Image (cartoon, rainbow, N blue to C red; front, side):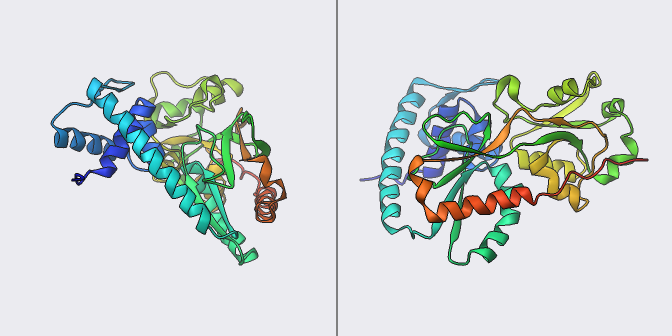
Length: 307
């Protein structure tokens, strides 16, 4: 007899073990960190055993948890392979599957896809969001949009766009943000999922490049996805370090504003990653031409607020 297994909880637990933490697992699964925690807790209660040793920065599986995570990985991996084979047999040749980060998908790609649909009614776009930390499989996506230094060995890699960095906030906060020192009276919003070491576009990087000093003891609020950081800034919950492609639309329509003039170039860029076999694919070429045109049409960064 096959047990009525809690598949969502099993998947969440396996992701936590693989990433050694709840936050990156939540990003991969596209849910909140608390939802992942609840899934794991419910699984432990269902089994009557502790599966994780939880730490402040890292969680590791118990012996029983390690055995279970391995079984889940093997089982779900086999299921995924079979499903991929079945989908490949039925996938319409006029469907383009794009793999990218959730934040980029929500704030930049989704608002522009209507333009693609209108220009290419014979093609269909499917978006698969993921962490972007691992090379994508050509069986799962035709094109990957990745964020980083462009180092993806074994793939065709083309620059999509660079980005500039600058603080952004809700317009209502502007009267109280005249100088960098004023950040001491506000909350700095931080994307905690920038896993690029010293190349990460952090507040400290921006301040250093602009030859500024951030106030001591400034309050910070860490959020698990870049689109959550942008949303929190629009809600007036703090000041975010704007990454140009993720905030340009909100700046242009007035949902966000620039309190300071200082801008610096990000060390990271956005890249189009695909398998070499796609170089002659007509549908892939059409998508690449379209997305490059969208980047070219992206407006300039609006000027900062002046009192």
